[in-house]
Amino acid sequence: MRYLVILDAGHGLDTPGKRTPLFKDGTFMRENEFNRSVVRKIDYLLESNDNIDVIFTSSEKRDVSLDDRVQRANNIYNAYKDNYENIVLVSVHSNAFGDGMTFNSSNGTSTHYYIANTKDMDFAQVIHTNLINTTNPSSDRGIIGSDFQILREVKMCAVLCENLFMTNLEDAGILLTDEFREKTAKGIVNGILEYFNINKKAADFKIIVDYSVTVKGTYQLHGDVKDFGVKLVNQKNRTIKEPFSTNGTFFWWEDKARTKPYPTSILVQNGNIIQNVANHYYSFKCPQSVFIVYKNSKVEMRKIYFATELDYKNIQIAIGGVGLIDNTNPNFKYDPSSEGFKKGIDLQTGKQVDYTDVLRKNSKTVVGYNLKENKIYLMCRQNIAHKNLLTYDLIKLVKDCGYDISLSIDGGGSSFMNNETEMVVFGDNRVINNIIGFGL
Image (cartoon, rainbow, N blue to C red; front, side):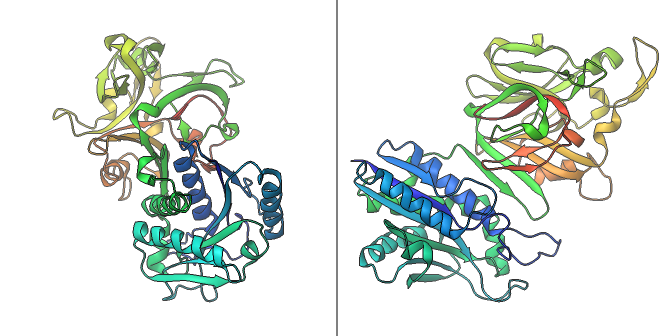
């Protein structure tokens, strides 16, 4: 038997008023940010089930009207109703109450069905039970018969999930976390599987990459070691479409027009050496910290002069940068100067050179590894210094993020991050050499 799930991420990025009130730091979360993240995770969780196909009512970042989303859902149903045993629609939302400008006490999770359809009520009960069991929300508001257009006018069985309240400060903080978004997706998937009488749970499937952002503006991707890699792109950073990626190594350009970038840090890709030595070596004879992922999924960081010092044929990716932390090495010490990030006289030309620019307060990209989770993290943080400029710095940040091994790679104007749906940190549109990420 084959089944089709139509996923509806309620509202668009520009829907007026569909956001949290302002947090203390002046930031807010758009509802669509949560909705899109959850439906993408549902898609990933269902992808490995050969009996279930998934289609979205909207893949655009812009607003798609409710009328259009309903029409798209019905067009899908009419086109494919003879191909599937059952077709259902799940619309994902987070709730709101009041004027939308101030936080209030309304909280909890509810699941809605079209009030005139008993079959939809049965679907809603199955989804809601699994959603509550997985997310353990602040309050269980139950299933509710409603007259929402997305439920009333579609031709297939449909539910609408209101996950917590954007207008409740505690709920809003939870909605921002990737942990809750993942639990929400798993709860909905478990309900779908139960409704289709498929004897599996969401835990049987695997989300490839998770994405999170804190209210302070620390963006993170994290995924399996085996999925981590590098890709040579040689294109403007704002045009890069690959999901789950950030800018890669430090780089410079071969030409005055700055159209031909090359890596200035050590770089190994799938057993092949792309760059054997960091440019700093020629100026100061300094080694470089290198974040290494072996083909057997072992992760380590070493300070080396040349990539040829490594067992590079058995390396999945090795990328050089500025070593930040290494809890696996008792002799590790944060010391950018020892890795060539300093001022001095170039040994070859006799001229003054300055590699300290990357340490200033600016946007930074970091690769990290959590030993207990056995996960690799990519982190982008805007406007932060390497150490002790004002108070909160990059060294403290990587410790707070729980990384056991961490390396600062190219930053500043070339910093960018793509999550599963969009670019969330924008670079300055310069041509860069390579990107790192998951599934490349």
